[in-house]
Length: 542
Picture (cartoon, rainbow, N blue to C red):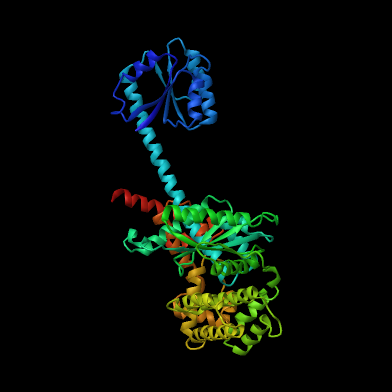
């Protein structure tokens, strides 16, 4: 049903027009009436949203021409029909010059009114359909973009980082430009949903559906905050994480994250009847410090309850950045990936000096950072499943419960040995295991500008040897495999979503849509546009 606003200073004329036909049968209803242009504008400004306006030209206070011109300024997409007498030629000409395409002569003839409304109904239907398609396209684009944004932020806080230049370029491609700055000031929040007794009965025991609703609510709440970026780790379905781009003013740095956390907590309780455990990390500066900010939020979450949000604000992460520097992280990673327990133990003792009384917060925080490093290495080398990563995640909760610091350090060495065993199984037992690990890494990261040289360095293997090993495992060369992954993803996007080609190029890792189109045609023998046109033609004849 399409809504009409009827504007005429004579009530008798309005009543005559209303009686001309069966409006409901024609798919219309006269929802609003006004006696002059000013009254009509006031109704529009108050929120009336008709699909069509039928207005007289000669009216007091504000005539039809002035009303139409004002409508074009404020509501440019609103359709207008002019009511005109035979003597109103100059007015009608002015209305046409203002963009009015349709008019009715007084007295209104029923057949003319019916014919005009039938034509307009078809046009409005086509417009609505086009608008819905555009909305669906935008939703698909947004969801695909959100998935890549979340994946990128998760990689930033958990995995090995690409070069800063490549990382910033990817952030900009994914419309995360506010994060691609050297002086980024960020804060993290970790949120866990807690299911109250009996709550699952409302969901037929389907905790997975409740978790999905929780994730959707988290994203919807974050959408209302300009600088809040949600991300999700599939290994922990009852949790969501948030990167908050905070203001540099010390006096207000904690406010955005706190306010967002409080709103999310209220929404979870109101809409899902869920309790939540929330930890807010300490603000950090720079992309290289994001891992510390994320770890800080996890530490705060481990200290929180459903009644109290822990904020890691009284202790300074900046004071520990030298202790667990990128160089320290690199040395620990190398020791683990080279299966060198002695080197690992030496580096661990540098982080936790025996002759230094490290505060308990700093001790548990640094231990958590080491565990997160374990998880990153395990993800890189673990094949088949993620059981070791899950075990490491669960272990972080027991670190703070250690009876002594010596016990915690001993536990970290035991965990290091487990990760080294996984590395050893992949790196040294079978070349095909190593090739599979590299291939899995490419599957997860093909949207980046990967090179065989960078992967050889990352996995501690000779580049020439890796090239032959990869081809033996995948059946094609490394560059062919990357292209294949990108092309298969592009084809799925073309088949499933009405996305623009420039958007698809970005989503699959191409900075240039023309280069993407060239690569696609070379791979499939037809351009992306030709491929999509064929799909539409096939769908239309099915």
